[in-house]
Picture 1 (cartoon, rainbow, N blue to C red):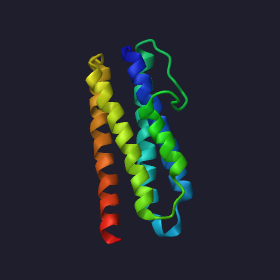
Picture 2 (picture 1 turned 90 degrees about the vertical axis):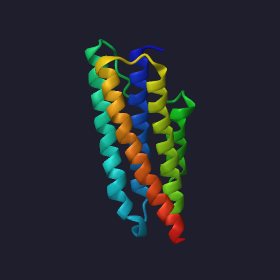
Picture 3 (picture 1 turned 45 degrees about the horizontal axis):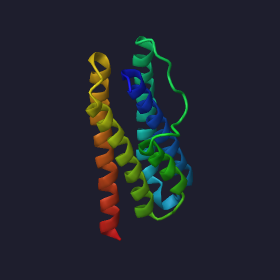
Length: 150
């Protein structure tokens, strides 16, 4: 898998993440409305990440994938999460969000472990991976706090 294919996979999983969080936001009940701002922040983050990745792909002469992913099991994880959202239980909502964050974190790790990224592509993916890890950790902390309260 070439450099551009790796970047396109990251575009796709970021698109999956956007769709997942948008579904979660639409399904939030009033008692969990505080999660809306958190989920919106990560929706915007993934929109920005897709745009940054797309710019690198275009600079290197590649074509950008515009949809969500349908192939890789890692990428399907956010799609599966999107389908499961809809519960009103805070712990369940955050469990599913954390599962999705595990998937995108793993996709970034796989992209970095692949060893094909170089130069601006490598720098960008490393920067984004750090932000993805921070997002994962925030969602996990919210989930663990919700579990402790229950």
